[in-house]
Image (cartoon, rainbow, N blue to C red; front, side, top):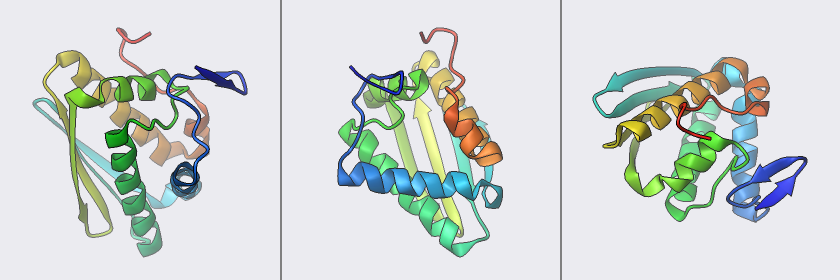
Length: 151
């Protein structure tokens, strides 16, 4: 486990070119968070969420970010692995299903799991993303909310 600035990174601290690109996209979204909107519908075993922007450039950044996160998730290359919620998402990645498609001005994602504990994890992740949209960098500095069962 690597420690950087007092934060323990459970799944490494990315420094490769892809990580730098993904981080740059995430920073753009946090910087312009007021131009983003997010709507979530709870479904039986997870969520259906739509994140979008009326700013065409920001909508493209959002789509690129989601595609990059799907790739990282599939390869197990964590981001924010200092945050217990994000570390847990990567630890349980094989038990969480995510599908997404681009919509006009953004992305619609469906994230599900069969295990009730993992559904709680999905809901906490959704709450975190709403925080990013509402507060930008301020939310990005904090540890994410997490289910009670997660250390």
